[in-house]
Image (cartoon, one colour):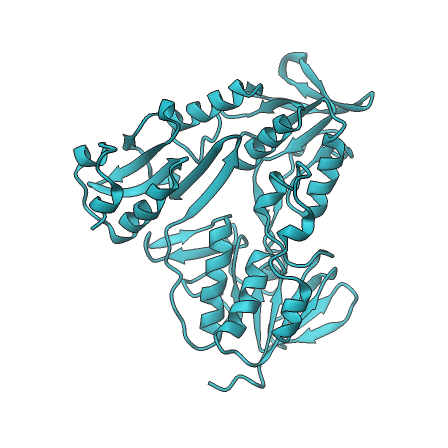
Length: 408
């Protein structure tokens, strides 16, 4: 298919946006490509921000997906530190924050998500942080180098990664979680309890059922106001209470939005000339036969490839088992599947073994997996989830029987 007269504009220069641009070239698209990002940094990967970048062990350049020169070599125009403020879908034109306009033939929205902030008094404080961007990580890292204590609001993956990094830097940590336990939406209670115990062993104080009233400036730090007139004085606070998809410009041009831009398995939105990829989407997953929204490296990377293939004229459905990972202390934690569907579990190994796997079952099939320091199992668990393999429960529970053998 000749595409030399086509112009694809990708809005959002993160993992998904950069992935779309590069994948277009890799799939033979020879038209013009413009990649627009609202940050000053080249496209970069976010997972290291809460770990090596925060701890000062890795330079930010190491997070770059590719240097700008690599995009130049692919004849991809990269425009950074500028925002798209409006989409005119009828005219196929964008308005930018400098009031200039740019036209497109196909548009890809990869605008990502932003951290959710609690609507409490006192949050407008330079010592209250979120962690999403390189600049967020650098600001927080600078304060943590001299801090003696921090409070982490939220006991999900990002909050616990920050807690682990802070402990590695010698900073006292209190995790404040509103739910009855950590990781309530991501892990079964037994695994969450194991993870909480690891954090406690590493010196983290965990407060569940936490009720915050607000924040006050204290001498050189922040006073966290808790329920029943209690308070906690710390040097800084990190919010890790979820993310909100950046759908404003999509809504403004009339696209269907439901907690994310609604797309099909090819990344197509409700408008024939507009696609979307990454954290901002609620995409149709053929394996689950429903729409889901994911915030993960895998989703950003692989959905971007599917979108590029669709635009290049060789559509291939994005149909993958959700997979993500987290590194905390000596633990590598990997999960696959949709935790909201899990209620029946089989354990392979024990926490005291240093590595173990927990599998979620339904109708004698694996529908989810959690691997702790046991990444080899994850490869085969994902295969078994995808292929809907019927399993023998007793064999599955026997660590001497490999998942590889059961996946055949």
